[in-house]
View (tube, rainbow, N blue to C red):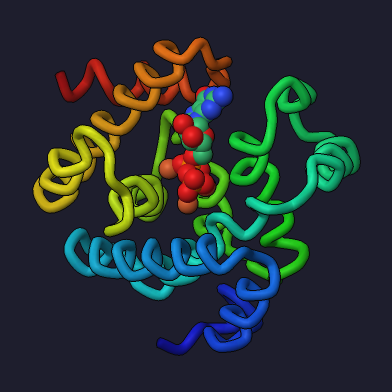
Length: 196
Ligand code: GDP
Ligand code: FE
Ligand code: FE
Ligand code: FE
């Protein structure tokens, strides 16, 4: 696959090289599995396959950055100060998208929004954002109670699949006394009652 310069000023080979350097071997393999699932879903649901490749590969680009890097970006870019109450789980997507933009040169807001939303979702998600959110959840190495149902829904009903993940993630967070990022709750309200 060839990338257009207006999406990313790198070849896929150059991008893979940067990701290999930024990520552990396991995380590097994960983003390549997510890329493949996302490209398949983009073909199935009629989204941009090139954007799915870039977003799939870049979604966890910042996952292994130290907390100080995220805190610096939150302050420099005056992002929502509420973010400072959370941690890597939230930052690597919401703040990580800024690093993908500044360090990898991705200018496409469609791709950046898909990265921003890949952990917490959003009240409005483009088809690409829904695909990245789901591909991350169902990539072949994922193994948890309910992953088979999630995979089935990803074949038949993308919106219902988003609702399924959102509900199960919120259940998991509550069950484990984890803090819920406000956008996660907004995603729940926007998607789950609609597909009940
Ligand atoms: P990964 O980066 O490929 O491991 O996957 P994700 O980016 O989707 O998820 C990272 C982690 O964030 C998972 O363990 C989720 O359960 C967790 N997570 C998702 N939403 C929230 C939230 O609202 N609050 C907290 N504390 N964690 C969340
Ligand atoms: Fe992630
Ligand atoms: Fe996810
Ligand atoms: Fe991921």
